[in-house]
Length: 320
Image 1 (cartoon, one colour):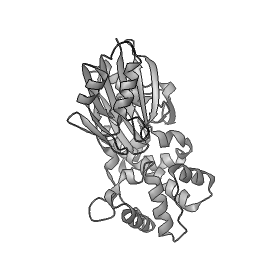
Image 2 (cartoon, helix red, strand yellow):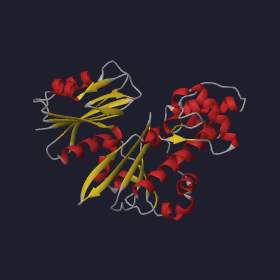
Image 3 (cartoon, rainbow, N blue to C red):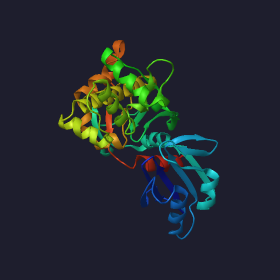
Image 4 (cartoon, rainbow, N blue to C red):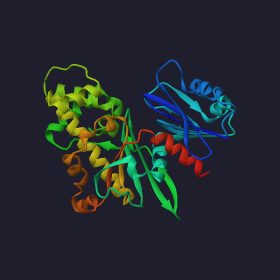
């Protein structure tokens, strides 16, 4: 008997087989916008095995409703009914990708992380995960009678607002370039508009316009590289804002859940740019006004295992 788990994001799709012992025994990767959509990729994967999987659990980067999901940053949608048909499985579950990421925290170990603040030994307690990738994912894991339970949500769409007169200009340009992310009548925007791989190029463009400097389209990777090298002041400002807002959201969520078990930073953008998580990141994380001392006591980790979505899907299966 085996189970199929998958992690489907806006950029990549990964499919794996899980053995009875809970080990990943076969794993394949596909591009989310490639020739094969997810259902066809699953069909091909299952066909390579002697028998169909007993169960299927998919971590998907989108809002899951009524057993269906439409990927937020990729033109794909599928349902549990369709997956059951193509995989010939008796049990199918679609999880939001960061619901699955939160499930991975149930078995996370010291070897999976780099400690940014607090003990290298991961303490027991409520845990929060936040991950800037193509979008911005958020999830939490709590313990009830000694058993892990996940609290899913769409924390990537909470609001962010300018915090200085200078930032007002950046936000004005941002909502002009990307009106869909505006929240309300003011200048508040979805967090994902700034703290994500999709948002960073738009933020960079907005800053360049606000500062009346030449605007050349840049990818997220280019903006981070320019900021790291100090070669482009617009990029430096953009990544400073990315760093500060990510830290503030992470600290806020840590307070919401009382994350004595740690706040974990994950996601493709984070893993590709560990230099962002410096003293200024921790200063922003710990800047909590009357509760700053509480924040400094929360462990903070950079989650370095890229398989957290697959591991979370596996952990979900083990609880059923």
